[in-house]
Length: 164
Image (cartoon, rainbow, N blue to C red; front, side):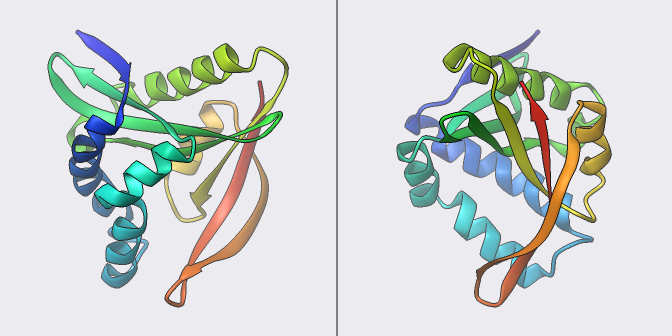
């Protein structure tokens, strides 16, 4: 049985643990080990996850039976603009439609809290195969950039977008 529930700060350790199973695997052929380590601390330390939640990131965790298999987070950035911040599924659970269900959960949440028309954007590394996933979900490449994140590292991303 597949379920998704909204996370609380009590789930930061679980999100951290899932991130260590998903993020390095996703970026193993894209980022250097040094940039991967930096980004894991920057995005997934317990303190930074708690700060993200305090700053309005809303996380959802997906379960297959009782096993956590992935997560998604969304943040409102402006009156009519939301950002899909993170969406990851365990490597052995990819291609089982969990990503699609997490993506749908993000859209449903946005529509629930903001019933008016709005825009959802996300950043995705230009070399990440997930670009094709987001295009299948209806997102379009809107622009691209090289965004400094500190310590001489950059995120080389597309900004993809869709209207909700």
